[in-house]
Image (cartoon, rainbow, N blue to C red):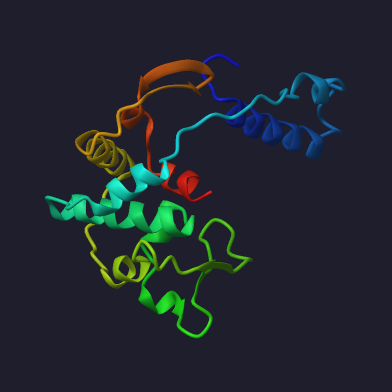
Length: 184
């Protein structure tokens, strides 16, 4: 339980329980269900306010990699798509008649996600911009944080991170997934 977020512990324990259940004939333990049960705790994370979102959307990227990160974070804020899905989204995902964006998420390929096209914030313009300068997760998150710091997203926040209370400026707490939380 030390050093891990509750959600990570819950996932690991569920995998262990499944493994033990599959091998019940060979595992003499009978009380592992109780031992591997993780009590729920409130999940905390930051998201951008409407004003912060507008500041991020209007930011002018300085490099190609920053442009790539900015485009995909903005698409995530307007669609709720995960980072890996935002890369693949383009204007061709939009249906003009229904004004909906549709895509099959990489993580759950058995569903089709439909999201109204965000005309207010110019989603179509971001989708038409098919910049392609991918970067690793760490670089993506570092650039998102740098942009947030530059535009003044610096409210002091306290959240639970890896099972511990962390107090820091908001820009230090954002990540690629913040775009998805902002949409939600």
